[in-house]
Length: 119
Image 1 (cartoon, rainbow, N blue to C red):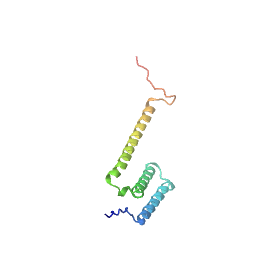
Image 2: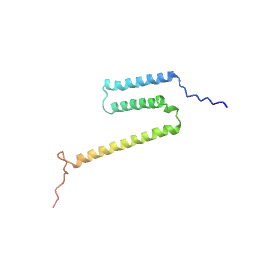
Image 3: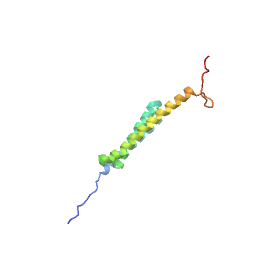
Image 4: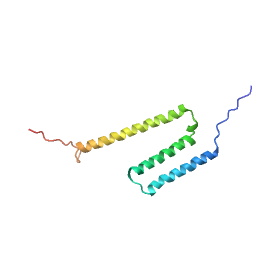
């Protein structure tokens, strides 16, 4: 009996160099956001976009997730997405709690502001 020869998946080195170059360009653009002194939501939106793109390329190409089966990709991406949703919900809850405290607590030691009962 002859043994079946199992060969690993080979990817051209040029693909890795292209992705490395793309990561370099995205990092440069990310630093340019600070250099050009963008402010407010535009700044944070650009930083997050560049961050997610870089992380996506690293996971897809260098960690070989692009070539995995769909089940493996879902096993990694779905829990990560669920965590992002839960973190966003916690952020909204924190804003609500802060606003509630500003309305119902005075600036002192945290005592409730109560109105005098009317007679």
